[in-house]
Length: 104
Image (cartoon, rainbow, N blue to C red; front, side, top):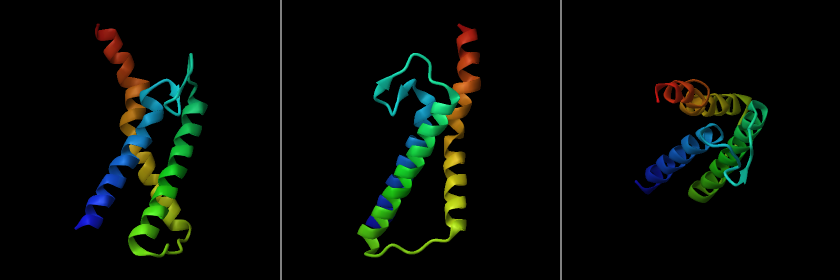
């Protein structure tokens, strides 16, 4: 039961980190930038993917005692899942923010 709760928290953290580059104009939520370009957002998103991946491996090591070897399919599925997680933030940044600004 506790393992399911921990994995749920890990998925929520992945959802938060996947959307973070598009929800603010700070680099890694620390450094204020005047204008954050698309390339910086994608590089930040990729680094957050690596953080989530490393956290997942650490969590697996802690809960199971061993880290299973993964083939390339695992990484393709996880990066696609991380892309899907990032969709709400991406839509907000490039589409919804402009619509909401024009409504005022």
